[in-house]
Length: 331
Image (tube, rainbow, N blue to C red; front, side):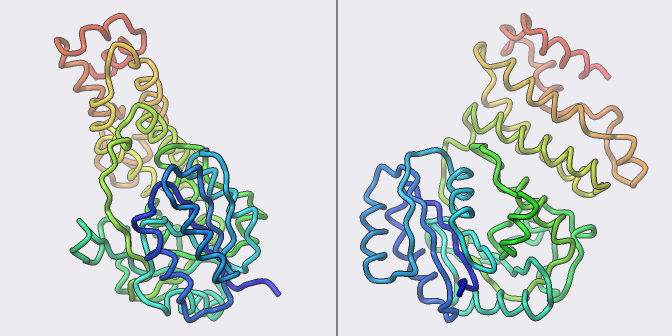
């Protein structure tokens, strides 16, 4: 008989937090679960911790593989999963109570939905626990009940939910191979497939903030923009104007910061190419018709910044893409 929930846990260099993560899963009141831990070539002793736990609880299954990135690790976990529903857990996070999976599974089955979730709380500096800002999750999670993704149209917070496994398999929904922003394209596609979802007015996930310099690397920046491009295309395809506007805003917030911090003589074309591809897909006319205040045409703030700051980016003048960007900035 298949387990009710498969919890997929990619593991990379988190031995410090891994026991707390595994304990929170294996101590759930819903006993009919399987835990699929993917050791993604972790250089620390995470594999030893996983083997120790697996020797004591046969619900823990280990996939030990070379490092290929967290998106590929989650995809490998989904292929191995046999549960009715799938949950995703990062190996430095944990469940706040032992009842989380039981309540989510009961809600999904009882309400007849393919996705069910709840609130997320944030652990900062290993000390402060607080409710995630509602602006960060796109929905007032104090409102328990059934919601439509056509009204929700958000892209972050995928770990707050469980997903029907057959839905993900039949729709071929996987994580793209990005270093950053691989979660939102998965989440958006899953929610579109589910159409409706149910939320609980209680915390179901604890997110630990850990500073990571690689988040603003060249690879992270270009992958972030590729992920945005994916969601922009999907928002246009399904007529999701709120998501489309959100993507435009992300280009001008995180996108601006990441692009500017990675510009140099050696990588300008790669970054500018990704930035221009994503931003060119923003339909300003549509957004203005929907009541959103956006410039027409949409020109990213990073483009305007680079065009104006000529002294610092003088080497970029030789780039054809920079000339395109500078011309856009004049509009």
